Image (cartoon, rainbow, N blue to C red; front, side, top):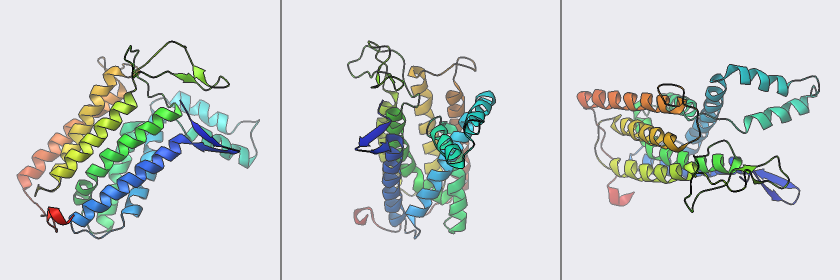
Length: 279
């Protein structure tokens, strides 16, 4: 776990750096998708809005899963010992840098995309299709930020040579705790899956699919990937032997399946504006 990069007196949070890289990659992929589709809009503004909405949604969803812990956190931010505005802001930023839920980020991000699709007169579902490959790649890169910041995305014990240590940041310097334990690097698996999914969706986007088909496939496949990785993650099993994330993943699979059935029945398609060779 390397939550900060120390450059002299400057400490840069690795979570923020990876989130920035995820946004850059997603912006580039979305821009190329819009060029291919003949859509004129500012990919930077779209991705920035979605990133902000997604981070807020992920944090809100994570905290609402345990209201008691939320109350404790809020009391820690504004406590008798920290009444100065700068101290309150510092505590808030420290609390906000960890603890995020994938489903909340997805829900808020999709809502932000649909709103922008309507406001830019692209079409809510059309913009979701264009953003599907970007979302898959950006999510995968962002997962590495969760790993480096120590945001609890650890897997079960493993003897694989590529296993990682759980580092205790409370020790100075941070050290493996316990020393001999290796766990599955589940964020790395999610990065590889996200890149593969993004490439698949990009290739699918070359075809004249019904509007919403690509979004449905993204929901199904990303949900399936999250459902499967949860079997080797350290998350509490709450519902019929499943974690919160697995239940949410099943909901996205159902939603994606329903969306595909709906759009295939409607059958509305928009062809690419440019030949593939020109994109």
